[in-house]
Image (cartoon, rainbow, N blue to C red; front, side):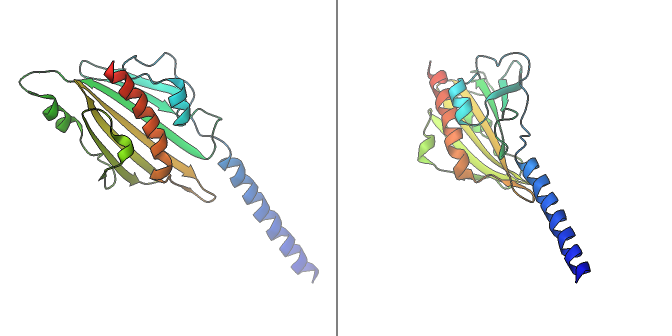
Length: 195
């Protein structure tokens, strides 16, 4: 009887220790630290939109002769339940022999993601610009929403990914929970593209 009681007590202690360790991991944010520098003005998003989309920190970017990119992520220490990133790419439509009109340029730009099994979504919330295309895909523990928009002679892409920490493992964040954040980013980019 004493041996059974000791075994039960050890099992309960071990289970409690595992639960405590997992709770600490779930509540510890794996977010990013701010990168030095500032985002390029073409893909800079206002801080309210970034905070609403849970990507409140600029984590890097790149620029070349054809496009400008800004990377944003979950601020370290702000949200232990999700890890969210946004990559915003802005590309002006250049009229040359390779891309004779903006519609063709948009079709060339709006390629589906190469990961998972992307599907095109038609969501009335995302009626931005002259043309738009919204893709959704899942791969591994990530959900990705990718929105392409053409406003006049400006193309932009927002790649928005998220995963949610669970008790035993991480899982893809439901797309419906991500759409408001993507909409906020897109609304801010649309205002900038119309200027």
